[in-house]
Image (cartoon, rainbow, N blue to C red; front, side):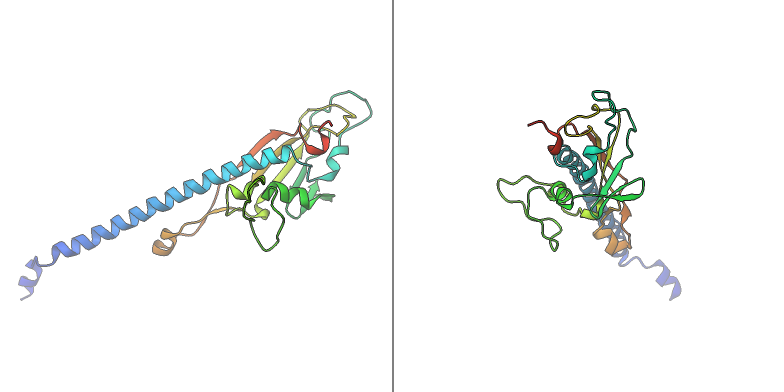
Length: 211
């Protein structure tokens, strides 16, 4: 009887199909998750580009930026590294690790555009006629993920009416690719998205724009 059992072919096709379908299902859902990860990457990239542009035409989040450059020689260029970078997040700004004055309203405008601030809503819905912010291009973005850096790279001149012309870098931190199917089926955990940034010249800063 054991010999007959080992030679029995009945049901083999069903077993093979079950194995093949399991592998194909995992591959198909894996491709879906990969496509979703690429979508998240592209959305985050667009968000930092928009954020950098908004930062360049908005009031600086670090309020001390306008008076940060030397003023001893009117008309002389503001050389690179004339002042230490201002690093701003949703909780405020620092310079060389020390807390400096900041404006949360200006940060929120970069993050969510012209929408009214609501602490209970991560990204307010965009309404007609209003300027979108970073979160409208990447809805999973949160305020704590955004870092805005104002640095001196040798632009502008001393005693410029509205202050120095900073180089602005908007970057993202602590963002994970979120897997949906693979996390449930194969136990995949979210992986950290590589850092991304966008850098622009802040010559059109609102507080420094000529009137």
